[in-house]
Image (tube, rainbow, N blue to C red; front, side, top):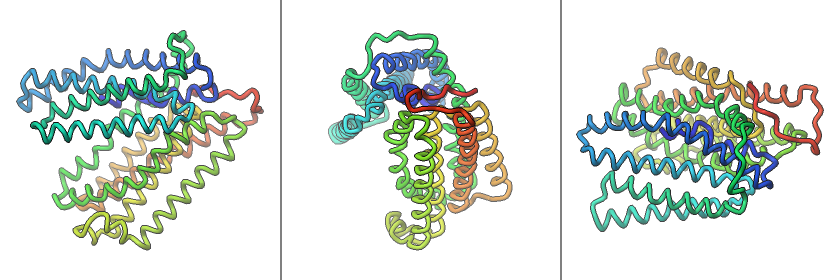
Length: 381
């Protein structure tokens, strides 16, 4: 439900504002536009989510009180997360990274402390976890709002132009975001159906290695995306090339280092998994593809290289590759699952190359631009 309520809205403010971030009125207007769209999605999605949650709870024998409590806690958490995404956007635009990480890190530590306190002092159950999470998230939302308040107008004029621009940005992205919200669970489902307990445990252990690139991917939304959103059009080609080449070079070095010296990574997995040398290499290879793909995707969004055909093409390619793998491979071992995931990541990356070509052709196909007159190009349909 979180992905459906977001559908790309979280990153829209930074990318739509672009180089106009110093104008509090512009920031406030786009923030108001995202709230407008989220409210519409809430009206459409929450009733369906409530019905689905009721059916799920009834199947597991939950009482009506437990169902209502958990659903309200989840809903409150989602609303607070939406507020956090909206009010941290001004911090990203102004690159107040220290403030951003102070809010998120201290709030996470506070939630962890509260969970530990309840665990040792009382009996911690699912309801307690969700309630503490909801309270901690609400606190984070209030903190983010107060911190970002100097950077945006509190009473902006919400115009039809900003709403339409937001829709042009979000709607083409929605099918892909919703699809991949569910697609990430496919490998786990397949392995649970045809794999063994040992292979499932090995996949879980190998997942730790993916965190190595996960930490690098964190800079995409906080540094790389906002940086490219502010750039003048004349500056983009060279810096885009340098960034992508640096990402590919870094990924290649890490993959080859893992191939030549896998022992340090195997040590992180533990003694039970020291035999998984090839699996470790495939895992790092798949994570590197995800890293490069996420980086290019974030840059493309920041430059409004959004095309209607991109999401359907990506979905079709991923489904085709996964169907081919299911036919050709039995997917009973951990390595089978890792190869499956790596090829899926490649299928997700390939369309981004076409998006880059289309974006450069649109913005630089014989059209002269200057730094002084630069504005981010409108979303393409």
